[in-house]
Length: 243
Image (cartoon, rainbow, N blue to C red; front, side, top):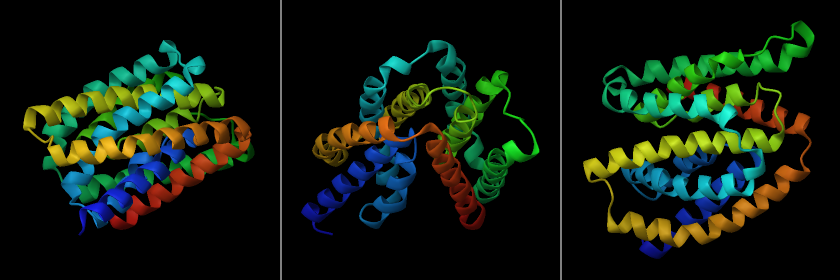
């Protein structure tokens, strides 16, 4: 494919992904991985997302810095950083289709429980489970690059403000992408072409982060939670079907 067209598609995709992640706290990597393999290889797409995510999450956490709390983010970040090397070096040897489908079922059950919580009970994911969910997210991120949804499900089950939720998620994602970037560096995965694509795409992503922040500020928390858990359910369904 012509390089100019590749650049346009990649930049447009990162713009949409950055907007989604800025408005809801997550979803950017998933959106990128749904589109980018159409114009670049899957490996390049994964590496591009890992590199670009660091810049995007830093911008989003800066935009929502008032909601950043070490108490909220610390256990999740630590769990994520511990889990990624485990998944990167070991879990990939398992049947990835089976693991991802099990994850899909779990995400769907969490989303259903959240939608029904007001009718059947007030059960929430225990706050003390933060580190555990961080490890699970890290293992899945290291192995399959699908570690975000478990952490999102935990964060959005808390009684935090929108800004606290988004800022916490970005802190966790930063911890994860830093570790993954270091692993990529050790394996020689960085290429001049990837640096070019990231460099060209970041300015558009910065505008998208600003627009997403405006959306987040105007969206009621109850509506935001419904949107997020609907997305979690659909992601889980996708994982269950596609594996």
